[in-house]
Length: 346
Ligand SMILES: Cc1cc2nc3c(=O)[nH]c(=O)nc-3n(C[C@H](O)[C@H](O)[C@H](O)COP(=O)(O)O)c2cc1C
Image 1 (tube, rainbow, N blue to C red):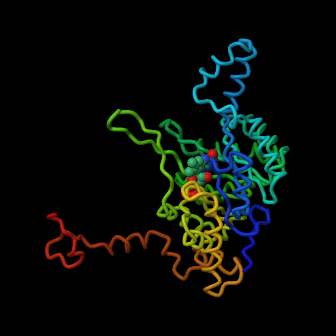
Image 2: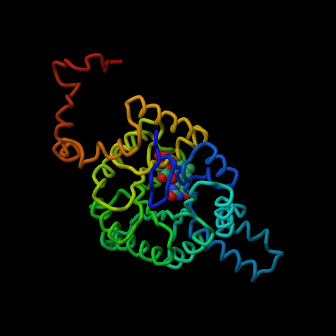
């Protein structure tokens, strides 16, 4: 079975890629991901806020003298000096590139133009095969218009593309008023891959303490629906590679994503839950499913269920929405015939 694929020009043995997560925050973790069968690794993100805190910490040390070191650590509560600073990040990229035989994709989350540009350049110098731009921005300012939000994505892409020669992927938000058009315009401006989608932190409320609860959950397989729709729509319509990122917990999701047209399928939550060795299970099960149905290569499956290829493209659109709603019956209407086993008096 030839499972090889190409992702933004990188040749991969198969389409299952380790998505950005804490599993790649040490050399040991990166080697385990490779041993477990990842065809490429997207490293956890380098956040510009951390870079800035690093610089502030540095200035603080210079101004205050070394005796205030302990104090300054208190000043930055929970600051994990061991892992998260830019020097540690770039060192880890360097070591990971030396120690592995698979592409190492660094992930960058910037704030300012200089942050995106300077660190993208240093990531390239450290030997990364590509950069994934983790554009994580929630426009809570009600005065901010959509064109301003969108322009931000174009500016970041332009700045990074002009600073590096390695491929550049962008992890997108699903929350655009015209997601397809946004993808098309990013494609026209040279993005090498789109990662669909970023999973935004959505705060909850703790009713006991009446505080905002920053706790976030791991994904569930039900979350594949939104990326599935957009990959199906974009397949064959843009040059950029398509990476599916969300809700892959078994080979079922891997195969569905490939069938709508994903070039690679990225995995994080289930590896956090079951351990990185679960990559091997995903790969074996995917291969087993495909060969049992007579497929010999990935090219035979990719895109067969995309909007371009299915007999009824309307299945992806509004017309089907109406059919879906019509297919439901009210189980509590008088003369219940369906679902009569629902015991509402329990
Ligand atoms: C614990 C955890 C940490 C993550 N850290 C990052 C990160 O640093 N940068 C990033 O772009 N995505 C990060 N992600 C998002 C994942 O890369 C992925 O896009 C998302 O979780 C959806 O995939 P999944 O359903 O397989 O988890 C993180 C996810 C988890 C669960």
